Image (tube, rainbow, N blue to C red; front, top):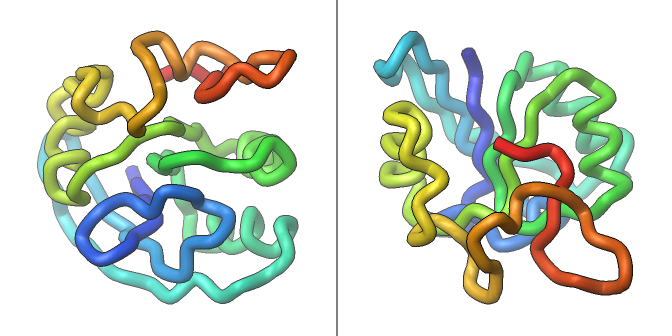
Length: 131
């Protein structure tokens, strides 16, 4: 399985749409097999989603993400876990051990249950994809 995480320094980039670097980690079971850092060019939304598909990404763990980009990525068969923050190593370890739902990995301003669905009416940090 390949897990992609947008990078800013050694943490998750706060908004995937504007990330210029991607950490791509190959995971087997609960073991990290390989990790690469890949430049992510500033491209239009369809190309950005297509780039993830080209890289054979299975899961995208990210901070905020726009609805249009999220829908294209989901349409490409890639699972998205949004509104995550933290250091890349800690987030990957939490993902592999099933602890990514801990509140310490939520973006600031988001509350528990934030990953359940995009909300209407302007509520923040809502996502329909779930974990």
